[in-house]
Image 1: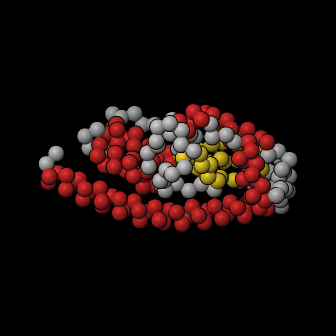
Image 2: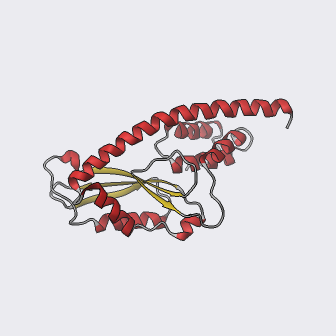
Image 3: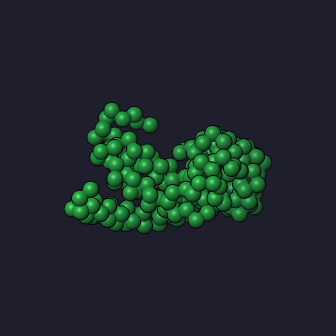
Length: 212
């Protein structure tokens, strides 16, 4: 690669990084506010409050060794209803990380039966709770209401910056690699609309790639 191309690449990468950082700062504020709302709802509905909910989570949810060794990192979102009479309603998962973690979250939800206070307002029946599974020392912008940190297992996992650079490096000449990099960033932070737009634009430019 010529010196000029290297300089142009670095300029583009810097501009992209600056844009992502600005967007990330605003998103972090939004997610932090959302987590405050979740805490208020759990303090009202869950017996023992949000602290008890988190303690029970760590008792029943395992971030297993295989997931950690394969660098399965990301934010999965528990979506569920608890009716005002305390009975459990529907349960689903947005942005699933793998089958094992999804099964753990469903098991935890079922375990919460009989642990909910009654309510008089249907606004307190619906929950959407982001859970971040990540590795100690890994740098990521993702924010969960609950964060499950795990020790490193085997091969070191990549920080967010690695995938930012991979996307910029390959989005024109090797779009499949760029798509994989962007999908990893979306897996880590499914609330980042910029990532989602970047993926959609890439698929529009290269329509032969399989859309996931």
